[in-house]
Length: 200
Image (cartoon, rainbow, N blue to C red; front, side, top):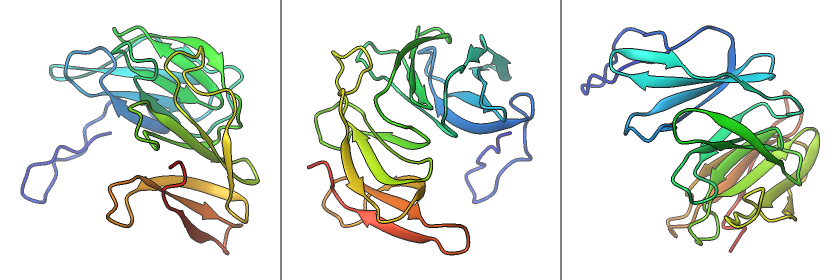
């Protein structure tokens, strides 16, 4: 569902985008028409549906099978500099065709459970930071537009000191660099840990 911002601190009533049951969504223009579309991963984590933003609402695009994926969230960006939106979920990279469809491209060399996607080393290529799955390691795959996977084959690993539950991206210290924050620990005893500028 989406809530339209009325510009006065209030929002419209909820409007339905697609069928219920999504576990993770990401917003991106997947068909290069200037409108933001929605990628919705099913609660079973087995399929992803692109919802194409058209005048007056959303229509479903071709459903993508996520067979072999292990993640619980989806991230999207142009990963190979072809002006088409791609997405990553659960250790697998799917390449966009620029008109709303996606095909499996490659497996990635890290366990990707919770992820954020951003340029962390200022080279204009999106990098992937990931953690979770019971591990205390925050792994960063640097973007490489020439690689089949769109990322380097080895990751930079950083210890969070405890199993990672989630990863977030922000800018904490006014140095114009993107920082990472992880949620760590077991339910009922979780802590936030900042990892500033780790890729520089």
